[in-house]
Image 1: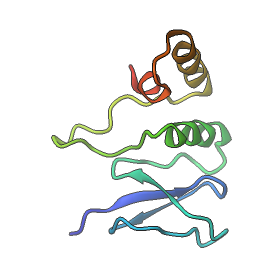
Image 2 (image 1 turned 60 degrees about the horizontal axis):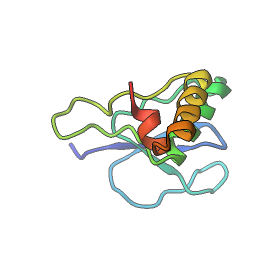
Image 3 (image 1 turned 45 degrees about the vertical axis):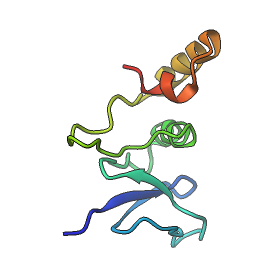
Image 4 (image 1 turned 90 degrees about the vertical axis):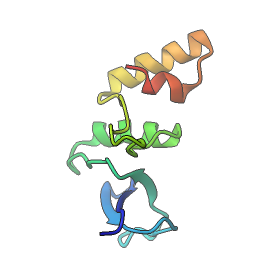
Length: 104
């Protein structure tokens, strides 16, 4: 079976699984889908806060790909509070946002 990864449309709050790495478009709004990774599980569509957290993570360059040993993507914040705390820490210390967001 081919390797399948999740692609998301943050505007429409939908997720799709595709087997090839290329540019896909959302069937609803026709915008480009973002690669979320093979270990991604979409939050419920009505959970706006979870989709906002996901937007911050994806735009910071983090995704949900499994690493080479199949251990998963590592820690990812789940609430807006956690995201705010980690971004504030990144600003105070000069740590890149992507590293601060991925730190447990």
